[in-house]
Length: 127
Image (tube, rainbow, N blue to C red; front, side, top):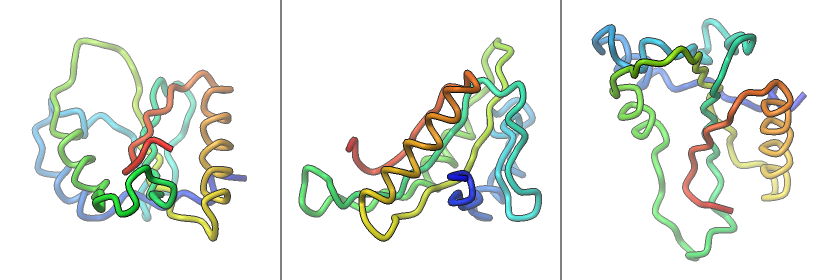
């Protein structure tokens, strides 16, 4: 299954998350870690997915995007008054070809939508 291609969230992000206040968004996200594996998707409303692919970028040499830094800032946001379950599935690394990466992204997004989970895709380009 395409979920096998997901790489856990970096330890750097997890370390920052430990020092956040209890009201921070990161303290309420179920995170894909090396230790615990993928989070349970049952009852999830939103799923964060990092995609490290930029080979088809409009600009020939786009700036390198550090998805971990985006996660750190996202996790720092404060919780709103909502009852939604968030999961962070980790990252999809570049495949052998761009088409390989696109295939995995499509499969994961389709699986999430089938389960009525809204994907939040973070990546360096819009392709």
